Image (cartoon, rainbow over all chains, first blue to last red; front, side, top):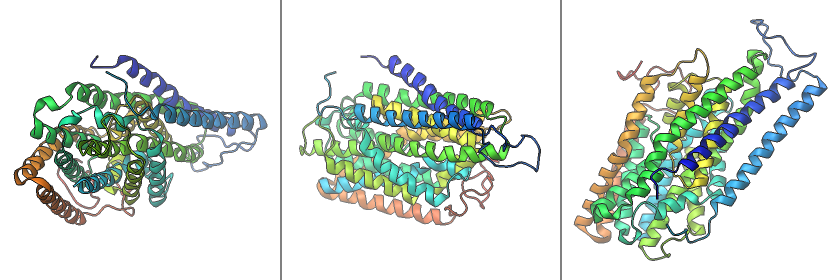
Length: 95
Length: 377
């Protein structure tokens, strides 16, 4: 019986980084590729800033869709896992 | 008697949801990704869903912290009183303190008063509550800082408005995940306490899972509390710590959701508040030029340290009182005093009202927008 469960903490850090930082990064990649194409506006021009998101390049849109799908799939899988872990048998394991 | 305890527990759950809306929704409200009203409604519904999702944390509270053989209904009621009072006091000052620690502190305090030190499972307390409490904000800050850095790096070719537009959409998703995660962790705590009361009353066997009606009523109480919304805490988190842009908001929320969900899975009853605060500080660290108001953070940290012992003291006092009078009458007296304190705090809060209308006003050093306070600038 240890005071600190290092294994669990490592898992939380690693999975936390993959899911907590990785998934939003993937979302950023999606936004990035979505913004590619003829309709995109150059950055930096102050005042003329636009909030157009969809650049119009077909490849960019496909990549973006792929990114967003992966994110949704990951969330779905995560919820499923939590449900699985979170419903233990009625008697807790002997300590 | 059991009914009284259950009702008190549900009241606690309500204050819990109320106190913690900010954890999930503060950043979305601050970046205007969601309207304040929409945000709290959404959060309420998702808390409800989350409460059904995982029961690991409830098990920790119900049997991992105190010796269930020595706990009586009076102990549970006194513990809850400690938790509620501390929750409302910190809410009044707009400090996002941990509802979980308030609850755990209250229960431990009253157990100590009732049965002495041997009734508390110190090992469980340290390894499942205190150590996670110290580590979780650091982990969350690390994840959020990494996320923030990556998000800005990847999206730097986008115009600022396009970027904010895009991440505001993403934030809705990540905020939903935090609310869900909150349900898996915080709603569980009250379920655990009610289960503890049921065990104490011999209604269910020791080591049982929470019965269905307990899960349902806790889920409803916490989502109702969330919907009413603790605007003060939302304000401190969303405006007080760091000025947040939507990519930061998304990074913070994703980090919180990931850390809370993972810990729920391991049965750690960590404080969603600590995690959310850690994440928000992390996004301030991960973005160049962003400023973290460390004095606000410091005040929060002080409140965190005091949460467990203070709630424990109130819990112990409440037990002493109830036990001194004895029986159901003692518990009733406790609850009447509790109601009085709650009323007084509510009355005091009307003087400096924070609601969905002024929640995003410019930060001037305190949770109450138009009221000068010497604490921080």
